[in-house]
Image (cartoon, rainbow, N blue to C red; front, top):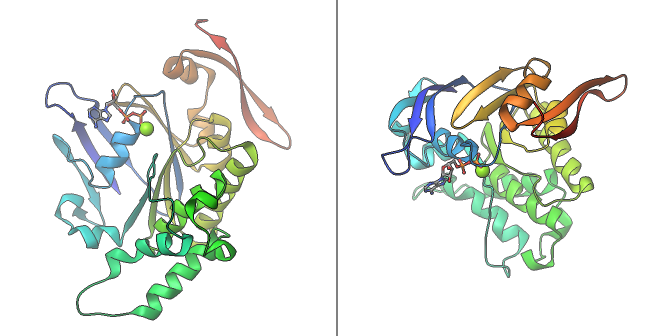
Length: 259
Ligand code: ADP
Ligand code: MG
């Protein structure tokens, strides 16, 4: 996917993305980091054609994404949004089956394929045994897995996840990140996600993109992107970057406002 000079504004006055340029490498995990309000979710919206940029284009498989039909794009790209809501009395299986919508047409009734995709999505996310549970019977971690399963049922080669670990405890955070890694490694999915935890981003990403105030400040391998200078510039936080034999590279925040 090529992101070419994307400039976007919600109100046609103030731009909140400024000439964003990046290439999303297929088969990789790319993580976007940056402070609240810097434009991460907006960029994902533009990249999934949920928001139309004022300038620039997003090219997927040689074609501008605004030129895809909605269902056609939904077979290429699935999004797990930052906030998800659904009636709490729907079952897991029912919700996951909504992911099949883009594949349904008036003329083809491929029920087997639908069922297989839903089964696969529930198996991947370890929800098969919870299929008859309703949303309000699930834990936070399970609920997040339902949203991921719904996206997986779309059977797309590309998956976007906006803050998939927010509000989860450490165990569930790692569970989600391990799942994402597995989807990438075993099923070859191209992943673009937004994370707040830089150490998790370092650990689970092939590529990191750091944003600030609607601009990309750094883009590269985690070791290239995560330096104390970059973190100071992007977050205004003083950190030290360390290397551990077992854990690899990691960051320790020291404080704010120090420069
Ligand atoms: P992030 O995901 O990095 O926290 P967002 O992409 O949500 O940031 O927001 C970027 C900027 O756009 C912020 O200033 C935010 O207030 C603004 N914004 C986000 N969504 C809307 C919207 N629907 N209408 C108007 N402004 C918005
Ligand atoms: Mg956001």
